[in-house]
Length: 138
Image 1: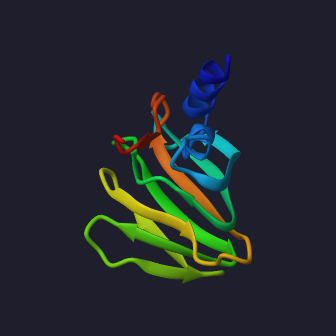
Image 2: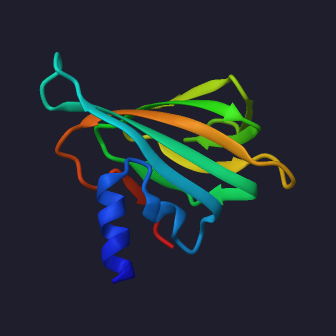
């Protein structure tokens, strides 16, 4: 039953509740907070996902659906992030970053071992996409 629920959550959430439930994730909670089809762009939707990391929390390395463009903004604390071959950067509350289709997100983690961190990820993605977060093979 847990596998079925995780599969349904992954299909429903762009960043994937199942992502936070994988063995590689630690102290991470992912909640879809918004979804709406784009009326002037047939076949596309916008989806908002709140990612909450407890102290020391992180998500495993991953990519997203091939159509996904993501704008992320840090709401609280600080987030360590590494996209593709770029440098690992720490983003503070109020700062943001973008992931483009096909980008590899190698690091997504709370920069603090003592304070929580939150980010809002806004996806523009093909409405028909069902697998929106693909965790790297183990």
